[in-house]
Length: 190
Image (cartoon, rainbow, N blue to C red; front, side, top):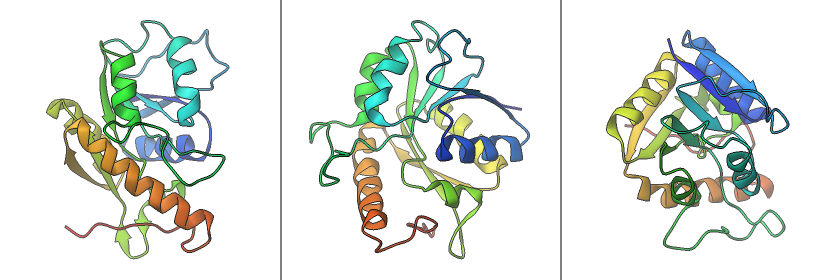
């Protein structure tokens, strides 16, 4: 049974908690205002907007050390919705990894909408793509995802987070312009 701490309380946080609990795990919610509460999960999900990540990390010195930290952000320019705000040769996940050298950072859940984490994208089982440099950590997260009824695919090294963020960016802009619904998205057929 996995113990997952989710920092954030929005739609994605709730949907990820659903996956954890469907799989028999426990989910601890910490809002950004819960600075005094200790992180208990071996897996910590950063379910906050990218601009809030730096502050969340600063509020929890040492609490993320030795843990698997999952970045679900899409580093969009939220004012214009027309670009990513990280350098072209980097990603939000890589920037977070640089801030957390004693943690294992993974990229996941950023190519799915909260509604699809209930189980499907149209007729397809939802697939969670996971990027990271630690194979055991990726498998630990994948086991949580599979236990919750979804499919997990190892998307490669953490440097692949850049491509995952581009897919997330495209999907968000399509939904924001009402070309796809917030209950839809991309499906993967393996």
